[in-house]
Image (cartoon, rainbow, N blue to C red; front, side, top):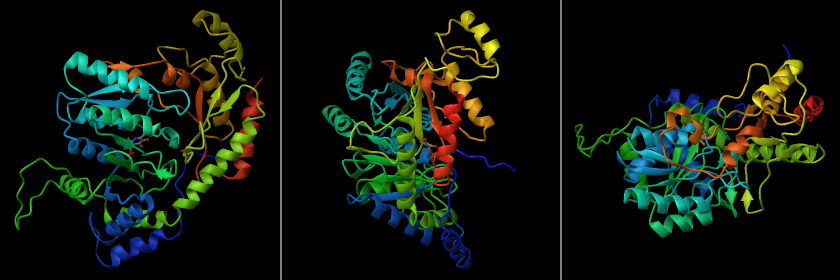
Length: 413
Ligand SMILES: Cc1ncc(COP(=O)(O)O)c(C=O)c1O
């Protein structure tokens, strides 16, 4: 079978199975135990800053619990980054609260701090209350402008929940993301920097806040010999088996980060020589990205080969496409979609055995969030229309990158 190059496949250190075996041998096949404790210790050491860490069943669960711990309730508003995966905002809706979406600034592609402040003031004006939390996102591992975001948050006394699900090991001025705000979220889903097959963690500022998260994550059981419950809780702890995978993965996290950065460097060098393709790089050395996924912007004036070219050109006038833009036959614009170039290139790469994916579709453009307030400046939408994610994980080799770049070069007319 021909090799296929995927966006970000899981990669094992080889030590995972020993931790899992030990769990079976000692019958710790439950959502607590030595692997969970050991994994939390490893994570705590990694993030530093005297933080505490709670291992959970997913990054989404971590956001959910952080919101509850911040006091978010039905009827409240929570500021979310629009340019993200839905999991940053879904837990706001679980609570009956409303996400208020903020657009990105064009350098990091993450939450625009100036727009954030405008939105906070406008929400206060319109509803009489400040939003209950702010969730910036390290999109594709790129750090957000955390100092500016924290300054705004502190001005209005609003807690920050850092969504570093894609940004494990990314640093702002050498400090690990997830350790600046009230809470920090990590994800160990199968495609992330490390995996526990599925899992996540919440970085907490002290033991008191860790205890509260642990309590919420274990059905809010009170300290009685029998089962006493005085609040609604959740079953969100990580399994001791999955935590065994996590312990094995922690032995290789630094290598994973180094590899993602190495792949980023290969793309950076290669795309510097290709007109019309812009590699999304860190705005400055302060933004120490893990480059979870490498991403490119495709200039709308570049022409991409398309097998449906004749058809595409025929329909181009009809849909008012910009000059040089090729629309594929099956992807005519409806509301906001990646432009024809992105889709044509994605299909070309797919045929060459390469998985690629458009950037996250901004949340303020998602039908499910259509009634939520949004403060936009056009950045996320513009990036979504012309951006593509490229394979970047530990399984991607130097030869793979050379092949991917060659295929992109070949696809440009
Ligand atoms: C930005 C972002 N936030 C949150 C999550 C949720 O993490 P999980 O899949 O572990 O629930 C993900 C990934 O899936 C993500 O990409």
